[in-house]
Image (cartoon, rainbow, N blue to C red; front, top):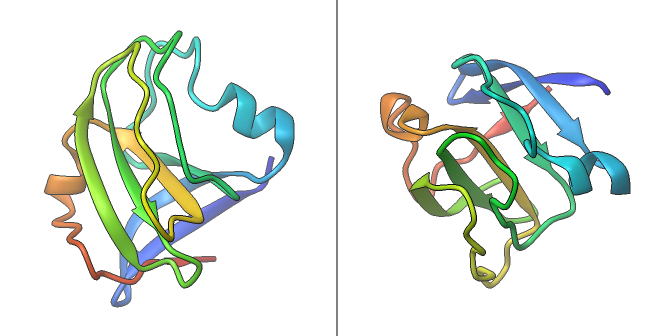
Length: 114
């Protein structure tokens, strides 16, 4: 799986973003992993809805539109939840709980993935 970097306004947010852009990588997501590093995130694309079944840790989920503009941020999603769809969502960035706040990610921010 190809690793990307995530930026906002030229600032590096995550230097290891897994690009889950195939059925199996999206299906597996972060299920069954015990943890991920704080510099790591998972980009589900295309994706407009997630669940946290079979996950071992809390995550932050950032919903993005087709231009990678932040539509919604769900902090500290615990295991065994289903997140409702967000209108216009095309991608979802998952990261460790607390990382969206640490990086001061806000609705309306535009993220760049390279």
